[in-house]
Image (tube, rainbow, N blue to C red; front, side, top):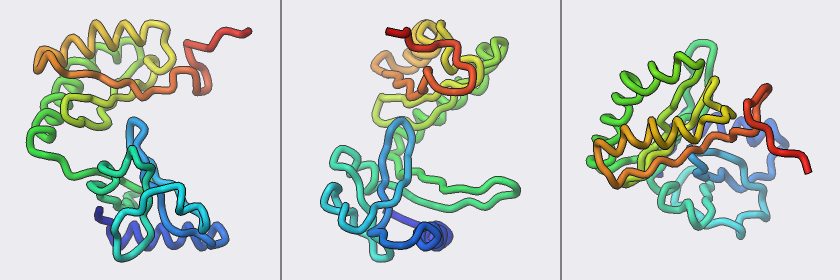
Length: 182
């Protein structure tokens, strides 16, 4: 687990600006990495990850990913924020590059005609984590796009590939899909 000086400085600033009393950061993975603060006294709910500079915690099911995480703070132009990546075996890195190329050159041009986009979040072994955006987020045909378009194309690389859609199709300002009322 690596945390850059810029990220460490920003985490400490955020802790201080929120009144202090924090034991460290929580690294979780739910389709993509997420950082939260852990209040002092709540540490026992999580597994501690070795780090010499700050308390780092993870839920048990996310320990392996947290141990391979690289946390940075990017301040680039008008946008800034934490960037969390992980060390990948060469096979996953190569597969991720191939998938990103297919998404950029084939899939996104096709879904863009409907105002949508597909974002590659991560690859773990043969599980591909994506998030749908634009017109794809909440679209009633999102599952069809995912299975007959995205998954079918990616399985041409390897038939064992599994695609995990992390999109919250029911949220947003104007989702195409809204849960039925009871």
